[in-house]
Length: 453
Image (cartoon, rainbow, N blue to C red; front, top):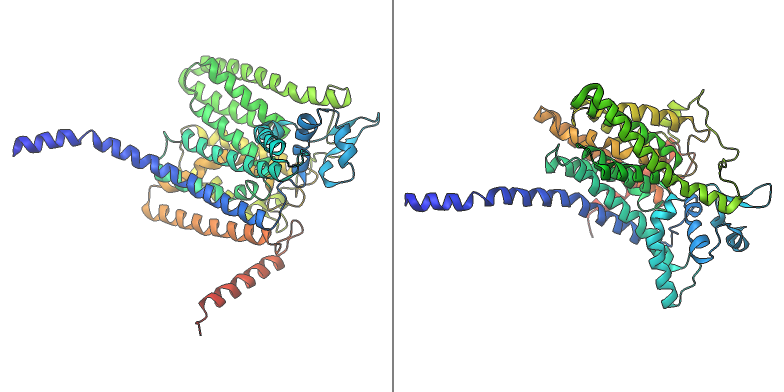
């Protein structure tokens, strides 16, 4: 019997780590499946109510695709001949010499292009109009942000896997996606740039946190991602600051001043690659206007000496913490537990500059959208703040923080739903709109609890 017990124990021992690893993978898969299910449900709602999947600023980003890939015309002349007096021409203006300039960057279109090309093939062979806007293209416009949102979440889970238990990562991913406006910008306003910035920011963190040894391939990949981020949204240049702080601190801890010199060389290489990638935008400007350098946002500007910090963070109209207080919880979490080592200082520097720049834009409310949309771009940096809430030293603190996360996620979904159905307006929201949403919810709940006759 003793021999049998020893044999059984030795045979089962290897299976335990394998079983734990399988459980860990399943836990990491759960938030992705939940996010996919929520996206699918949201897209079904939008298609059922004929909500277009390319709207507002999204029309500007999307316009590169029919112009370049269908009309074969980077000057936008053919596009404007058809759509000059429609919302589809968002962002295109005629310059003083008669050429056309699209103010939005080409980066979103680059990321959307595989989906657009697939839709164009379907349109060609299924008899749909090859105009860039018929049903196959609408499906492509819906799929692109959904796929990039899921990829972004997956990359964050991979980036922080060495630092947190699987359950912590699963909770953090759920809170990040459903407890902020990320879900909205992966569905309703998926044609905007923000979920694409989220994906690229996640890819950047995955590269930086895994970059422990000298690696030319990682340096080139990091530069490529940074360059794409610039093409998607020029203000993503702030991610250079995060990369510099993270690499600088990491290399200094490992090698002192020699480590800092190494970090400077690595960042220089990344900058060269990013600059080469950004040349695509210069080429696009030159193709449409004949000029290599232009200021595309004519008449729009920053107010660096009078930033709108209070309005940006706390106002009922568009306050970040008012509409999505999960951001505040994530920021607090960054400093409650100093994990990963050296991460909080880099995150703090990035978030301080990001908030200042975002609040300095003259149109601090960023048009008719849900909440402070610009901060979706910064969500990857906030991810460990939410994971930290699940590893607090006290069990009571952990349960309290996670319970608060569930409440804030419910509030975010509440606001999202009533924005989608038109109770909360795209701009100039007030307490009245929230009270109205609550009264409607209360009426639904009371009707649901009423006894059946």
